[in-house]
Every structure is written in structure tokens, then in C-alpha cells.
Length: 156
Image 1: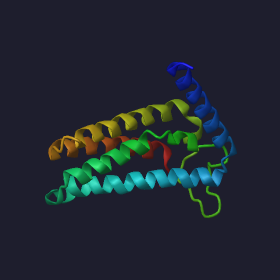
Image 2: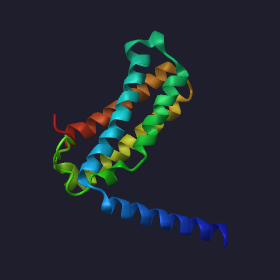
Image 3: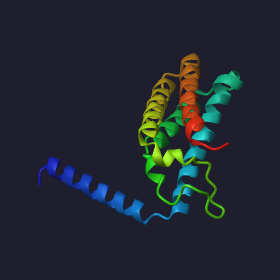
């Protein structure tokens, strides 16, 4: 079997498996997993903010780069797939602040998601340089793209 055929087969199996996994996912698990992803991003955003804006004397280029890479990784995981039917409202102890619009405004969600992914990837790229000033600006840009989504799709 050629490499191309092997890669195509592997991709098809992965897509089929992912579709099956999402179809079987419980709404409360979808809420739990997306909250976990957002918590990882928040923790890492706070690390970068602390080391570049709030307390720049504590700047550690390696820690900032690691945090930026974690943010980009989560941003590129396809968390949109975790907004499944039935996860629109809190379920038991699995609370959600998602507005109903995140489940219906597909074009708007796509737009803010693409902008955030781009900003997260740029943050990781800039963080790899170790340039504290450039990182602080890339962080602010990533934060603004987070806020754009929060403003439209998250309940306070």
C-alpha cells in the first residue's frame, strides 16, 4: 500500500472514530471537557500576563513559550465539536456559561474561532522569540480575540 493510501485510510479511520465518539458523548461530558480546555487556556494566559504585564521582572522566556504553546494547542484542538446538542444548559454539577447563540450562529462562531486560533498561533510564534515586548503585544491581541468570543457567546 502506498504512503498516500495509508495516510488517506488513517485519516478516514480517525474521522470516523471522532464522529462516533462525538455521537456517543454525553452532554455533561462535553461541558466538562470544554471547561477543562478553557481552564488550561486561562491558567496559561494568566502566566503570560503575570510575566509580561503585571510583573515583567519575573519574565521567564521558557515558561512563557511553554504557556503560549499550551494555549495554541488547546485553540487548535477543535473544541467547537464539544458544543453538542443537549449541552446548552448546565447539567447537575456541570455548569456552562455558553449562550444559546454559540449553538446556532455557526458563521459568527466560525469567525471568532478562526481569529482566536490565528492569535493563539501568533502568540506561540512570537513567544518562541523571547522578545518580552512583542510577546506582551501578541498576548493582548490573543486576549482581545478571547474577549470577542466571550462578549458574544458567554453568559456573565
